[in-house]
Amino acid sequence: MFNTLGREIKEIVPLEKGRIKMYVCGPTVYRYAHIGNLRTYLMEDILRRVLEMDGYEVTYVMNITDVGHLSDDADEGEDKMLKGAREQGLSVREIAEFYAKIFFEDLEALNIIKPTITCKATEHIQDMIDLIKRIEENGYTYFSGGNLYFDISKFPDYGKLALLDLSELKAGSRIAIDENKKNPHDFVLWFTRSKFEHQTMLWDSPWGKGYPGWHIECSAMSMKYLGEQFDIHCGGIDLIPVHHTNEIAQSEAATGKKWVKYWIHGEFLNTPKGKMSKSEGNFHTLKDLMEKGYEPLDYRYFCLLGHYRSQLQFSLESLDSARNARKNLCLRIALLKQEEGNNSGTGDVEEVDYYRLFKSHAYDDLNMPQCLSDLWNLVKDTTLSSSLKLKVIGKMDTVLGLNLEKAEIDTDIDDEIKASIERREQARKNRDFTLADSIRDELKQLGIILEDTPDGVRWRKI
RNA sequence: GGCGCCGUACCCAAGUGGCUAAGGGAGAGGUCUGCAAAACCUUUAUGCACCGGUUCGAAUCCGGUCGGCGCCUCCA
Image (cartoon, rainbow, N blue to C red):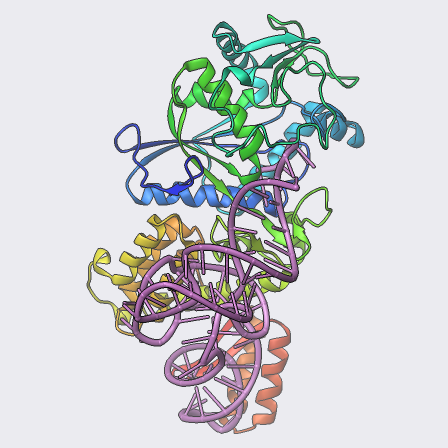
C-alpha cells in the first residue's frame, strides 16, 4: 500500500500478527454526504475487504463528528451544526441524528461493510479532555485568549506527513491571523471562548466551559478503541495538511510514541469543472442518482473503474457506462448460474490464474481497475466450467462487493404477459411474423425482452 | 507566490524501461436467426499532449513547451 507518510509503496506489516487495526475519518453530520465523500468510504471498504481476503482480522473504527465545528475559515463563520439546525428548524442533536442515519443508509446501499466500532464525538468528550491533559502535562500547550492551543514549535516533526515547509507557507494569506497564536499553525485543543453566538453544545473542563477543537476527537477515540499505536489511518486527501498533521502532533505529544504506521488517503472525485464539492454546488448525493434511475451499486462499480489515488472524472455519461457494464456482468453471471448444472466441473479456485492475478492486483495498492479486468477475463473465458467460474466470482466479489452472486434474471411475469408470449409462439408457428414481431415490440415497451433460443423462447425484464 | 498530481482510442480508465499498449462503455462489420435479441468472431491508438535528450530499447527515465487539476483555508 502507498503510505502518505514517506510517500512510497510499502508492504503492510501489522503491529500484531494476523490483526489490523484501522481508523477512518468519518463524516461531520450536518448535511447530506455527496458522492465525492462516499468515494473515500468506498476505498476504505475495499481496503478492509482486501485485508480480510488476505486473512487478517480487521478492527475498523469510524468516527461520527457530531460536535459543531466552524463553517468556513479557521476562526470565523458559524458553527456548521448550528447553522444546519437553525436553517432547518431543528436542534443540533436532531440534525446530527438525521444526517447520521442517512449516511449509514448510504453506506449500506453501497454495500459497505459496517465498521466494527462507530463512535460519536459527543459521547467521548471526557476521553478528549483526558488526552488534552496529557498533552498539557507534557508541555505542548499554552493558554491564550480563552483557548488552549497546541504549540507546534515544541513538536519538531510537525508537518512531516504533509511535507509542509513551514517557512515557505504564507500564513494568513487567505485567512485572518488569530492574534492569540504564537505560530500561525498552532491549533486549538479546547475552546472556551466561542466565536459565535448560541453555541449550545458546551462541556465543563479544566480550562473552563467550552468545547473541543476539531482534531482532538480522532486522536482520543482512535486511541481509546485501538490503543496508543495502531496500523492504518485513512481519509480523504484533503485531510493531510491540517487535520491529520495536527492529529499526529497532538497524539504523539501525548504518548511520546509513534502513533500510526500507515496513512492511506483517497483522491477526489472531479467533475469537468473541478473537484466535486459542496461549495462549488456541483455535487450529487446518492439519493439524486437513485432518483435518476441508477442503483447504488452502479456507483460502486463506477468507483472501482478508477484507482483510488487518482482523481476520477465523474459524469452521468460515465456512470451510464458503469451501469451498462454492471448490467452486462450480472446478466452473464445469471446465465452462468442457469447452465451451472450441465456444465459443472472440478477445479481448485486457488489454481485459477485469473484469481491469482486478481489477488496480486488487489494486494498491489488496491488496483481495482485491474481487478475488474481480471474478473471480465474470467467471465469471458471459454475453457473453465461454469461452476468453477462462479466459485471464483464469489471469491472476487468478497473484495468487489458488487453482490455478483445474487445476480439473477428476473423472469417473474404475470399471466397476461405469459398469454402474450403464448400468442406470439402460436403466431410464429403459423409463420405470421408480422404479428409475432408486433407482440414482441409490445412486450418490449412493457420492459420484457424476448429471446428465441433453440430450446424455446426465453424472457427477462429489463 | 509556493508545493504536488495529471495529459493513453469516440468516452471512462489500467499499464510507469523490453512480449501483439488491460478492461469496460459506445460504434461498425460478420456468424447465428424468419427477423431480432443474446452469444461468438472481427474491428476502432504502428501509437500513449508536443519538442528535444538518455538508452540496444521509452507511453514508462531526464529537460523544456503547451494544456488540465488539486493543495497551501472548513472540506472525502
